[in-house]
Length: 563
Ligand SMILES: *[C@@H]1O[C@H](CO)[C@@H](O)[C@H](O)[C@H]1NC(C)=O
Ligand SMILES: *[C@@H]1O[C@H](CO)[C@@H](O)[C@H](O)[C@H]1NC(C)=O
Ligand SMILES: *[C@@H]1O[C@H](CO)[C@@H](O)[C@H](O)[C@H]1NC(C)=O
Ligand SMILES: *[C@@H]1O[C@H](CO)[C@@H](O)[C@H](O)[C@H]1NC(C)=O
Ligand SMILES: *[C@@H]1O[C@H](CO)[C@@H](O)[C@H](O)[C@H]1NC(C)=O
Ligand SMILES: *[C@@H]1O[C@H](CO)[C@@H](O)[C@H](O)[C@H]1NC(C)=O
View 1 (cartoon, rainbow, N blue to C red):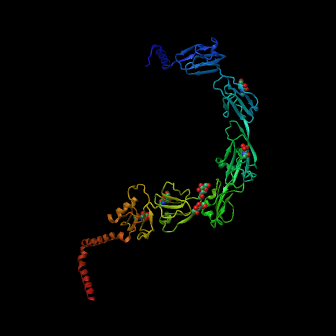
View 2 (cartoon, rainbow, N blue to C red; view 1 turned 45 degrees about the horizontal axis):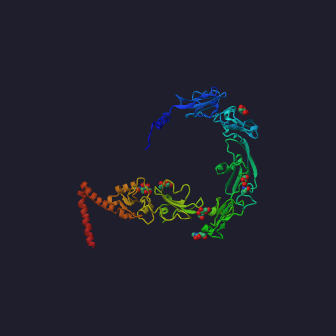
View 3 (cartoon, helix red, strand yellow; view 1 turned 90 degrees about the vertical axis):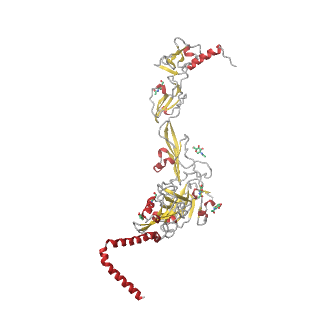
């Protein structure tokens, strides 16, 4: 059990009072005229006097004309101070001041650019937050010193630092870069004399140089550029105009060492083969291993197709042989020329009709040579029902917004066969200008149904067919087309005549059958019409009737007699 007595409680209470209600602050309070220790002691309790500041929350300390003042925030003088400090915890204005002054290099003018020689000098003022500066205006004008001295207006390129003597960096240096272009001479890609050493620097180049000023905003660097069979090296201030569009492809280095951009490019490896003597060169490139290119100048690989469809793969830039139909070049490492040109079927149901989707009629289906090497072949359908096939290209991709179904495959001519298989196909036609709609052959007009915006998801897909009593023609289509379905219900002679079915291309009833009900009805109607009109014009009928009966009797008699 802990027993609390008065000797423990009282100091505890005091501490609570002091810390808990500490919106007032306690500060050392003295000046070194009255109390020389004020500038020298480390401020132990008992040596320097202190006060509780009644209205402020900071302590301060300043040195004016070599006199040290300590006190509550606003009390110590600050005008003309060579050092001042304020702080906000109890008795924080203790200690010996000023601490060691910052030392910086001081100089001005042309010699100041190089900044060798002179030792750093202490700054004139004692500021806790002082900094050294180096301000290089040009290659012949620079300033160095302490920021607190304020006898030089810093420009925007001034470089600041806060460690003794830190403003010693040379204000200007020469950056030397290797400069060459493989388009104008050999040796820019690799060291021609040690092709097989893994790491090397090129040996045939000129040097360019550019002056780099400390703190200048322009980024200066050495660069090397590599694209297919071309390598260019040089200084960033002298970039050839034709590389301007490729600035973000440059490899850059800024080392102070000379020619940091002289590293050899890695030696290229390519597949080398020809279908004229090795059919695997087309059919199974994985059976052919890529081999290191013999020439130091072969930085890329190629694959070319001739007009007789033979293929050639190899090191370096694509050859210029007669008979070449097209070539592909690449510069990635490790047999990048293993790709093959593809061809795909190309068509659209908008032009080729149903054949492009159901693959049962060859008309208007073309062969497309894909522009991009190894492009996949696509078969896709849009939500408006159009089916399209072709090489994957910018305007034909599975990812475009209107695509409802898409199939992508690798290898020439793989985009064949009916598509899309998941969607119901219906014959879609009507009688006008398309006599095929009367009698349907398999595959003739069956097309995938379009996807309609408001199509109910739970409704089973269906085909429809009917005889349109208004336009007097056979109409076939998809129930998912709301307008068509509405017309089917409305314009067929009565409800049962709008025929619905659910299997692939099932709406193929003969036209005769579809119009049968209507024709029966019209005959009945005609009969009715005939009867009603016989009553409305009875004057004619009354005079004509005996005559008609007479003729009718004569015909009957003649007919019986001739038998
Ligand atoms: C600024 O003042 C310092 C100290 O008084 C002096 O050493 C330095 O040369 C001066 N710098 C300039 C640019 O006048
Ligand atoms: C290539 O040059 C750079 C920069 O000059 C150098 O650091 C590196 O050691 C050199 N490499 C070889 C393999 O000589
Ligand atoms: C292609 O060549 C590789 C390696 O020789 C072999 O394993 C593979 O079965 C071949 N593929 C075909 C389709 O012939
Ligand atoms: C070609 O080589 C790359 C790696 O270099 C590999 O990823 C790719 O599958 C290869 N392609 C063919 C068609 O062999
Ligand atoms: C269907 O949509 C595709 C893609 O938006 C378009 O290219 C095609 O012309 C459209 N076809 C019809 C008949 O509207
Ligand atoms: C018949 O087909 C044409 C063309 O497909 C279409 O414009 C027309 O609206 C159709 N008529 C009927 C009654 O469905």
